[in-house]
Length: 182
Image 1 (spheres, rainbow, N blue to C red):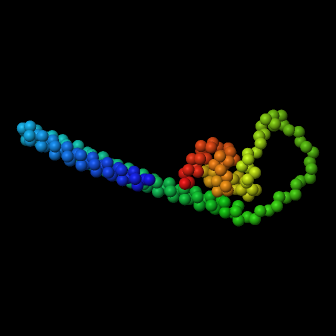
Image 2 (tube, helix red, strand yellow):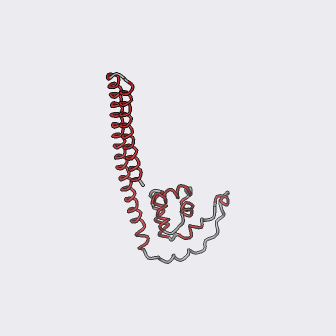
Image 3 (tube, one colour):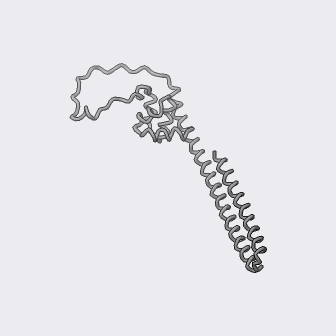
């Protein structure tokens, strides 16, 4: 996609240069046909030459900006690859660890009375929560960037909406992170 942008910019700059040359020649021909004095025609031609030089200078600035942008893109790509490698390293131990049976439930303890207002504060666990195993939950609890967590959950088969719900972030934010990985 970015190559298309570069090609389009190059074609526009080339077309602009051709049009400038044609305009210069046309003005010179009209000046000669209208009987304009050679000094006046020369002054107009010099003005056009200055404008053309400024155009070439501006085009050089655009090329510098494009080079800087390409450097930035490469830096971002390296960062993304580093994040992916970090995520792979984060998920690898969880995937390689054999599933261990849940420990025996603790002995029955007398039921505790809920704190005032606890009923309103408790909310049902999201549907996606049941799909995560213990090691997966531990990997998420370790911390890290939101983007890493979203990628981790997507790698575990959760949908973008489920990952957003699990992490308590907006669906749009989770979709953006998923789109950046593509």
